[in-house]
Length: 114
Image (tube, rainbow, N blue to C red; front, side):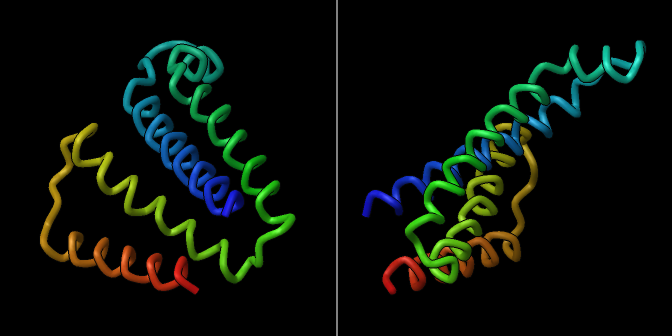
């Protein structure tokens, strides 16, 4: 059970890292060197750190959890990013996307119960 929470935390942090990448990419300044642009867009750097912690947690969880159980749970990140995209970036959510997210959640539930 502890491993499930570690996997879920890893997935959550991975999604937060992805949102930070997107936010940072949207705020890269138009002038300066590539390095200056990346450093000025601190969310990208923060996203790398968060994503790194997510990866370490994932590796830790894989020590004891079957990959065939753990890996499908990563798809929860698609749903989390989907939700965050709506609230953070005000992206439009159509009925087909909503249905797709519902299907992903259905699959996650089936895998988690196995």
